[in-house]
Length: 364
Image (cartoon, rainbow, N blue to C red; front, side, top):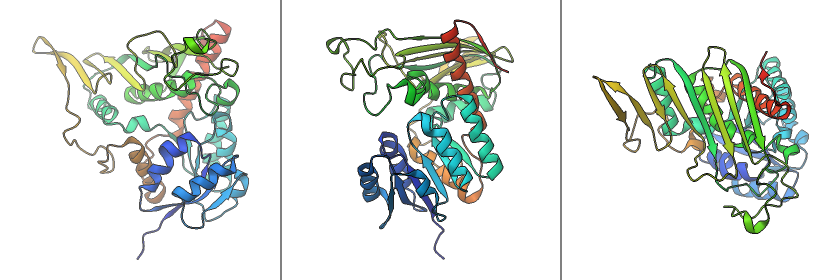
């Protein structure tokens, strides 16, 4: 008997669709991408030709795509502002949804997504593929077995020296809901909360800056070519100090353009009562044993264990897609639960609000 194939519709055929989701889904033998939607029809046509089954349909109106009852799963890969209402419509149409990060531009919109998934009894997950990196999986496993003890301090780092994304609408604050904080800060904060297994924030203090986004072209030195200062309405840097209900502290650092020599992104550093760990250069564990300080650096290139559902593929995007489709087909556990992504959205919103008001932001 031929294995049942999951029929998928793609909404948004831009950079993240081509760079992550569609290649990863194409690698899976039990899925078929049968429909593609984009406001720019040419992009949908190109995606259908490259990744779709023969006869894959093309749309410019996502609501028309959702009318196709054969589609079981939808991937929402649009600019951030559209995440919530497209996801809600897809869930109400009876589809399971993978929505690219961030979940939404604010917690009110994210709550609508949670409510829609619950009332329709459909799966909803958020694209946080950095959890699937070998370094992250190893650090999480160490946390689960108690290596760190109680984690009471962490740093979520998402810093680029000069790497402003100049394509799409990344630098448009209205369309994206913000700049580097909601773009790459999302990944680092997600990793940190996940490793800590702590999703109860108490309050936060935030700052955001527009210090470099108006630089003249000759002063930018941007990795992806010059940006247009007149269109760069998002922040260039944002920082948050987060206190959790149990007293733990998280420092979140995010920037697309900052004058720092040593920068890195999508990493977390944790410190606990027994040991600490970080992802700054692979994985490093530090502690004290037999009265001596030690540093442990595991070799992650030596064919480690498959940490989840027997999947040994080290490509984070492929792992993310495989785990997601397994959840749809077989009812296995979601790797990124929407309730976790909701807390990430809450905290990002709190940092932005604190930055605007100059006051601490308290979570209900």
